[in-house]
Image 1 (tube, rainbow, N blue to C red):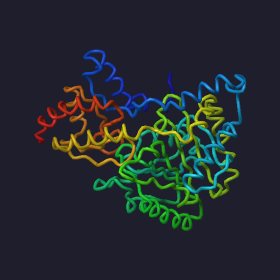
Image 2: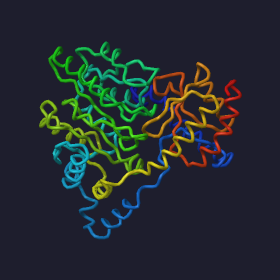
Image 3: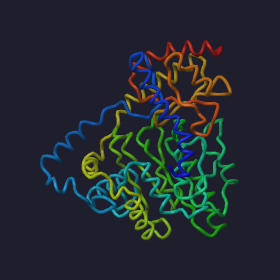
Image 4: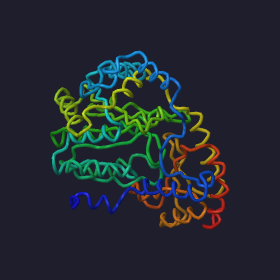
Length: 396
């Protein structure tokens, strides 16, 4: 018999993954070119050529025992130094390799942070809409998720509700920037406002409140949007990063955590996070891909590809009468459902082989998410089907 704790997960399996499986089924039935799957944030852009060359070079020139062997639980020292040096050059920070822990993607990184920080009953605040797995990660360590209501005008940080949700039990706050699912980019002013509230509450409560900044889409920003580096604005910040999007490596599961020296009791916090990385079962991040990304710290995604998709889908849906949040980052479009029950809208889309994720999967019903990290042809071919869907709901 499975654990009681797992039964709710079994009953409420991820709608995103379920839609992904539905897409595979429909593609087999109707042909992949006749299915318009906007469900999963799986990059359609190949990894940079530089990464391929780096892997070949490592395999050809390095000792295979070293390449495929264990290393420090925090990761190879020279890999962490290469990443730290790159961040320091780009953002004016002062990290060393000791401030970085290589992780099995951002999901593992978030779990490491929460395992390091949470005691049973500690509260973690998230801003709706949010990646629903945050709740699972928090409950892994018997924490309590506290949800801030969405600002449905701008989908920025709802600081007024945030201030009300803070309590003496608040141990951490998670933000995601650029944002999944809305594509919003929080500004420097947004982050500074959040930091001011946190600093006041830390003094009031007499203990640290940690800001965990989840940043797998950091490099995907458009229209000149700047993504602030949060450690510069709030001392008790941990940054979680993944190369899944910036280097199109979601299946390789490689990322890192930054714990700056400014974090309260940073030496013990870093040591505890390194142990959490090990005892969570990961032991260390994958060795070959660690070595490869160290040679590609200046490489990045093809922003032009995503930008063309972004404009085509956003402008196309506006012309059809849909209401959308203009995305300035990540590769998602957040669309208001033409009916209150967005799941009804999602089901109607399947008639035209359009796969969307309901906003309730992000704790924000009444909207749907479209992942435009697909081929440009998919978007072009989908728009006539969206036109049919729009007519069904009286849009136009």
